[in-house]
Amino acid sequence: MADDRIRNELRTFVRDRTGIETADGKDLFGQGLISSMFAMELVVYVEETFEVEIVGRDLALDNFRSIDAMATLVGRLRGDDAA
Image (cartoon, rainbow, N blue to C red; front, top):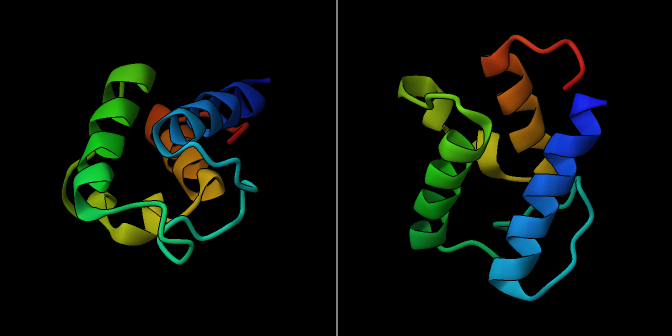
């Protein structure tokens, strides 16, 4: 399922960069895991890994707040029904 693959990729990236496992629905900013610099890394990572372009209102903080939110964004941008 594409949804699981997206979440796994995102989870691995966040864990590798922060050294911390987090639940998919947890607020990454609220946990202090994401700085503004890391947020920009996330944008680039998501664009390159999932071959999507994130512009305008899609750059909203809420789209990067959690693994779930990022997976939903990727699914929407790719036109997937799974995410």
